[in-house]
Amino acid sequence: MIRRRRECLHCFLRYTTYERVEETPLRVIKKSGERVRFDRERILAGMVLACEKLPVPVATLEKSTVAIEAKIHEEYDREVPSTVIGSLVMDELRKIDPVAYVRFASVYREFRDIGQFLDELRPMMDEEQESP
Image (cartoon, rainbow, N blue to C red):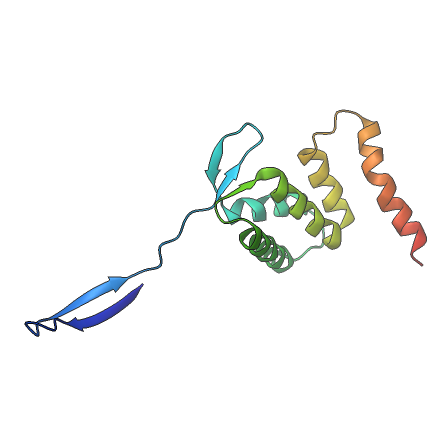
């Protein structure tokens, strides 16, 4: 908020105005079609849960959350689909820790059987075998 002292040009009376930036709140379009207010803390909480009992510093997760939020605000100004947010979180977790990535993916993609789980793991295992 910005506080300004002003003066009327006609009567020379001084007064104070308070100005603040008017923000359009970002809304998330959930799978059900429901629209809720964007909350970066939910992203961080999901990432912390995926990294539970793993040697991942919270500072790393906070940095990733800031990066995700910046990407969202860059590309969307009013509404963002939850699928976009989930994909961005998965991309960040994949860079941070493969176990956290798989944990998050298993919940986010709602794996129904072990075949879907293995389909997600195969590309990661192939990448690991290719790199020395």
